[in-house]
Length: 180
Ligand SMILES: Cc1cc2nc3c(=O)[nH]c(=O)nc-3n(C[C@H](O)[C@H](O)[C@H](O)COP(=O)(O)O)c2cc1C
Image (cartoon, rainbow, N blue to C red; front, side, top):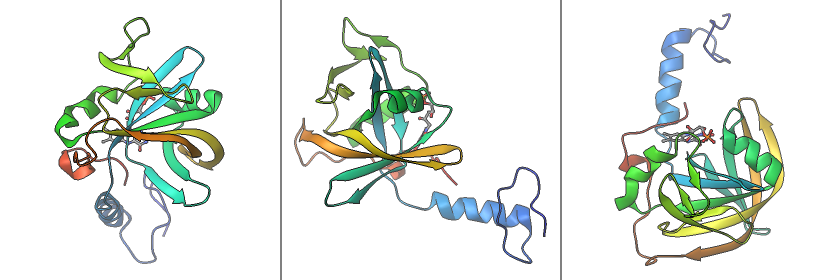
């Protein structure tokens, strides 16, 4: 069956493309995710972006992967700067993620991103002061995934900034979804 315009294949034999497309989206949305703010930097340009396409990929080396839209400013900064920071957000701070869905306003003098205080991590990528924990990474590999690039970074520094028991944000703590 030919794939309809706007519907991404492959479509299994004998299935209605529209029904299958909706079903597949619901299945992919059902995948559990954490929700983070990804910090990026190239020179004096910095950004923070809400992201859930995040996973550890190996024990040795300590590599973490992130999927970033090619259209995003973050993509440009991670490509050029070769670093990223991953901010683990407290569940009680869930409102933050809505503030990082487009390029942020950076106040370099006040060290704020959209009004949220940050400092530069070991790689120079911004780490939010109120993040529960962070991992700071140098890009080692990148995989072209169509609309996204999967950047794999080595953890060069990691730490807690708040009590280790603070519950961290997961997708299900919000009404947001992304993917599918
Ligand atoms: C809940 C949620 C999850 C998101 N997850 C991702 C993600 O995993 N990867 C991604 O590239 N953009 C993701 N986005 C979109 C970005 O936050 C952002 O809107 C867009 O990529 C532009 O970012 P920029 O500031 O770097 O231009 C997500 C947005 C929301 C609301």
